[in-house]
Length: 332
Image (cartoon, rainbow, N blue to C red; front, side):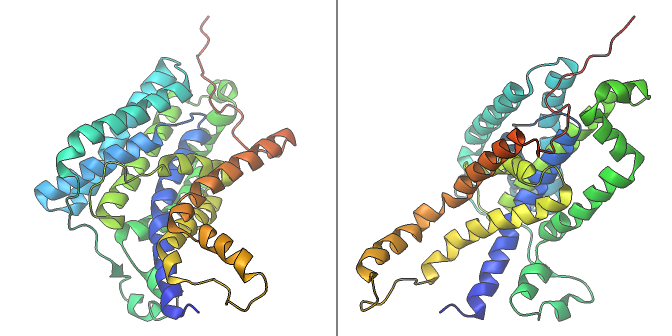
């Protein structure tokens, strides 16, 4: 049987693995809320991870590394914004192109850093009350002894919620994702709002990449995102474009990731004398195999997409009405 130490470690790994999805998912949600689909999240995360890693290696300052990663993600998203908003290019094609570009750039420039480690963000307790809260069984160390990026991701969830639904800029941003023509008529600058949303999304993707290389792994690997950018896109659908639901979905996917790491510490095999032990034990061994478990987050992503299609057929999908729709202002 697994003890409290196992579950505490599992909870900590879940929170750490969820942070990258929270950051990238919130960024994608903001972009899509303005009507712009960004399938370049994976590439932006990779570029953010590499630029943050190299900057930290060269300067020894992980804060500077995080800042550079955010700028790099924002710069890549600016390309996406120009292509899709100014030139009305296909949003899906532009995003995939940027993912391929990011993959190529990080493979080429990151090759010499492969396997190198870096001294990144350390785990810290919250000031004043952290030492007390960390004593809470199981969840205390996971929630209150984490990296700065973990805390920032949690804080961003209510911040994004407040920004979208309780500020004029946020409401204008949502309006251009629902009905850009009407928003334009009401005096909202559709192009400005969409540019803002896409750049914020790219900056958060860059921050997510920096979390991977400077907090989660602290070692460079060209494939460290491992498809998390695509999961972030699916996570927005799972959350039905609501920032507070991003947190739940991220923890769910993060749990699958953590279980992969901790599955070897568990033994679910039935005793030799148990009924059907000879039949069930091979199945249990297969299901709990770490290699097989590494596919679970992606299988969960496929399941989310299937459910989304079913909801769409039943008209239950809550996606922005003008998502992936280009907009051109009519002139007399």
